[in-house]
Length: 71
Image (cartoon, rainbow, N blue to C red; front, side, top):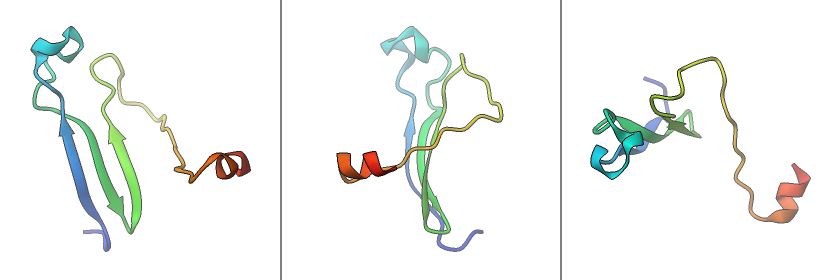
């Protein structure tokens, strides 16, 4: 176990009857929010149309436009 790490929230795919995109995904994890050594992360399942590969996305939460412009 990694110190200072925990799962904050897990969201599951909704019922497949809501949209054809969700077919076969009911009950599977769509997003998970967690921390690893006090660093927050969000994992997102892109669904059956996107396969696992080496690509990642990074996001930076900013307090406002000035901070966004700075980064």
